[in-house]
Image (spheres, rainbow, N blue to C red):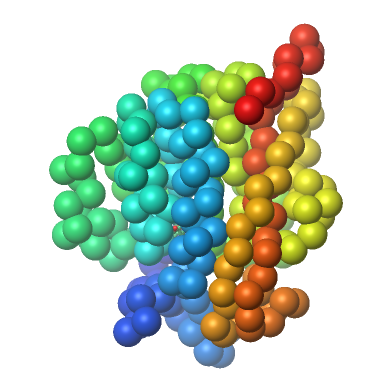
Length: 227
Ligand SMILES: C[S@@+](CC[C@H](N)C(=O)[O-])C[C@H]1O[C@@H](n2cnc3c(N)ncnc32)[C@H](O)[C@@H]1O
């Protein structure tokens, strides 16, 4: 989401989805849909498997954050810049939950210096993004570099957002990072899709088994991930 889009209003519909205006003037855009809850629950399971310190970028409907809260972890850090979404988080008492820290800004603007090799689990879902723009490419590279600095080497797990029913495509979707070898895993999850949004268009409505890719950063010693 660019700085401009963060200034655009959002609203919640009766089905519990989060929407925003379409910058091209067409139908509103779904920022987050309630039907992705099972996927967000699986993401939480993956990033909380090791306990410890967990980071989520983009609160949206708070689906992944709700699920993270069900695990026995040491801390839960959330980054959410949108003023209305942040206001709702405050209304819902997120700032008062034990172990929760909220950064009310873009992930690009957080001071990460206190988080060096800190996180055991990381998820990032800052949609909507302008995936065609060069800023998106720059942000992808900056994100991967940042992850390299803030994730626990060897043991920290990072979920990469991707919607695919093909486990090989899920593996291949991983952005590349110069100087780091990624140890990739995919976890299956079933999602019932009641209506189509762009990410789900190629699958259509119905029940789909999707594969969620996650990775750990391997060092040159080639240490293996154990599960
Ligand atoms: C798709 S929603 C996240 C949904 C969330 N995973 C859930 O489980 O409900 C995207 C969220 O990312 C936020 N966002 C957009 N750009 C961001 C950025 N640069 N840094 C952090 N969050 C961002 C949006 O305001 C929005 O709340």
